[in-house]
Length: 113
Length: 160
Image 1 (cartoon, rainbow over the protein chains, first blue to last red):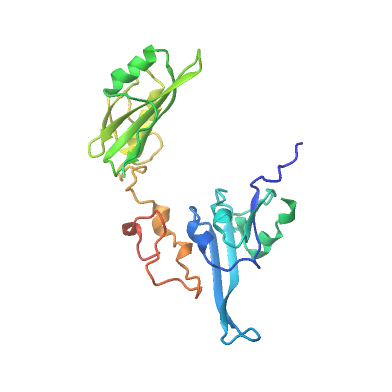
Image 2 (cartoon, rainbow over the protein chains, first blue to last red; image 1 turned 180 degrees about the horizontal axis):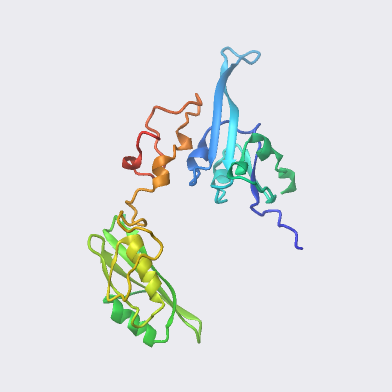
């Protein structure tokens, strides 16, 4: 058995803390397989004159049943919130199992790549 | 914008052009397909032929008017072209003259517009709400006219 090359396009991992819900990946995806839901909150930082609007990511879903692994979302993300990882074994029994939310997308181990 | 000329030779007239290549030893049919180029008003037929002995290969093409495309069948010299021509017929609405059997190959019904013409609406693109229409600031579905790239506005109904 040969090892999977570290740069293999196995899955796309999400770093939710880096995601700003900017929607660029959603809009660039040719397959429409990414969905984002977010809301904004007002944050007043110490010393700041006015509160700042910050987007909070509520839901981030990739549907692996639709994804064609082109990697455009990884390329366009301005905040490096998406990254290729070599993990490829994430089967589902029903098509819905192939829709991965934030929890499962964050489980993919970026340090492995 | 006009598409640049593809590599290879123009085969016009088609049948005698293909016959000439086959006589030159390019007798292995690798590919026969079509490209819809609505901006140029043409359907481009592309053939790729291989010569086994020296691994040489050649592309040939011809442009047909999009409004009334008729292609001469090459099944008399390349019998394997029969399925490819049936596919071009049903997918691009190209009439194939001299084909022995133009039954639909993959489609159940050929009554609708040819599926691989670029102006044929893609049902999934019409019915699926575009996930990109969600407003990044509010998280709500936008009321602004946000249209998905590559989808003509006239395809988009109320669902998007």
